[in-house]
Length: 427
Ligand code: ATP
Ligand code: MG
Image (cartoon, rainbow, N blue to C red):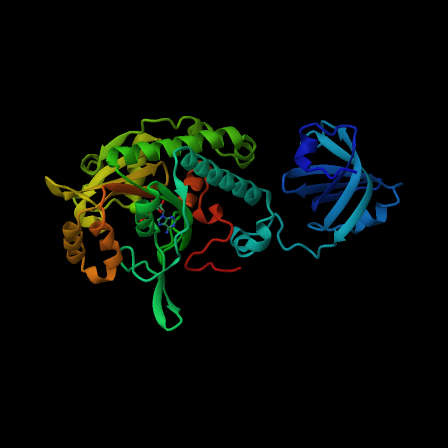
């Protein structure tokens, strides 16, 4: 007999047919003459009933929440059942009888978070992880369409990408190494071979502050390409964001509905996005927060206020050189301004940072010195400017930030299966 996925039944394809489903007991309610068993598999949940006269009645009585089972029966359309279909059970095979499941409705959020390994079975996490997977797929699809090659940079690195304050150090045999904070510099190496490259890989940041948008290990969608300028960069990011939002809006209707997330905001994502300069942003924000001055970095609160003004994704560009990393290219006639752009979204603020990279060796060395970095630590990076240097741009977008915006999630820890924060690293 055909083993079917629950979603297949719910689409009405198996009505009046005999099926076998494999999954876990989601809920159970026992009456005198009838036991209701709700089963879940990776695709959905469905109700089944078993009558007292059935020889498997005692097996059904034994069933506990989260027991794994194989259930055989006939599908009936039933308006009263959740999802509109029900299985009339003929036989039940208990595969793994569960002990008393520790997660129940009355448990606190904190308790549930500590039970991550079991909570991942919840409907909520199941749906979030599906949307996450769809974002990854849609991103790859866009990169491929635009002729970008996916590459695999290292996670162990010997020199810090930017400042050291959020860097994780580690012992690597008898050497001191770090975990990567961004793959950017490695992508920069690869553009000389493959030109348009991207990667989707973890980045590690020793972020001590507890916010709704910081993890210590997150997934970073990064790209880098040569013979390009700031306009190319912003256009590409707009294209990627539009493609991902439109694809998700099309493919994840059920997930959004069940999670209670607003899918309309994704449908509304279309280029061109509003673009404002850093200076314009500060001028506008000063009306709300007079302590803000030209030159200060935008914090989470400022970004949120700014995002309310637009109520959709937008760009802030041309940041002060002084608050940017050493590799940011500056304007020849305005060296105090860096060619850098952040994409922001409502409620979350920044979700990506991109920019043009300094391609002049002398200027790069000067910028390193200004930031107390030793050029000799970056010899290989300087080689890229020695041998066929080229104007190039790139960006990095946080996958989990994108996901919490899309799904209206309260906290970034729900956007990744195994969140890592200052306090969380189990299991
Ligand atoms: P923030 O100022 O919010 O800490 P950042 O400017 O330091 O971020 P970037 O170095 O620009 O971060 O990293 C590129 C992108 O990676 C960010 O726009 C964001 O989407 C994501 N990101 C950065 N740090 C984290 C983190 N700790 N957890 C999750 N995502 C992050
Ligand atoms: Mg940034």
